Image (cartoon, rainbow, N blue to C red; front, side, top):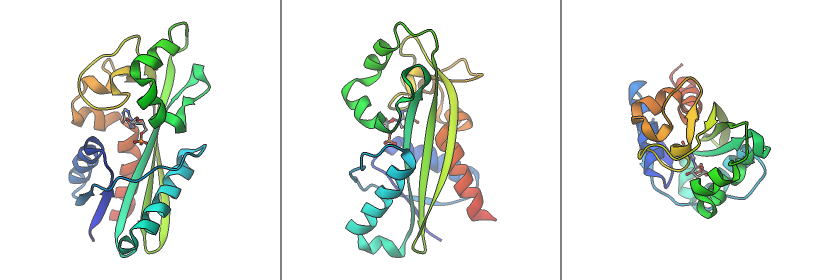
Length: 186
Ligand code: IMP
């Protein structure tokens, strides 16, 4: 069975590929850019994105594919930016988040990942959560997005300071994808 990961983000594909290969699974990259609907939950965004892709690319309805939507939820900001992470990253960036956090004593946050998997006219969702904290400054050059300001619990490195293999031990995306991949191998 050929399984496509639809994403415009090469880093997401690299993370997924490494995990898939470690589980002896094959995935292929479909670099399709799609507009994410702005909704209040990642679950709805992921499901609707899947539906939009199928509407626009009807040939994909015969394929098996998945996409993934993630967000950073900061406790002291009542879960902000959450489902608005993409927009907030583009507008405020990591510096803007650090500024919003300047006076905050509680720096706990979590990343959430929702995978929407399409097969046989059905969409199934898989979830992964990683808890951690927002650092006081940017640390590390690797990864993408909020990686330089997020340190998972029980780690002394941010995601941006980790190798891809180490990020894949802790990340939210690894958890949602592992759930999907293992469901396909049983
Ligand atoms: P997306 O909609 O899933 O692509 O992600 C929403 C926002 O969160 C984007 O600005 C991403 O750069 C950021 N993001 C998603 N996943 C990660 C991650 O694993 N690390 C850091 N930032 C991420």
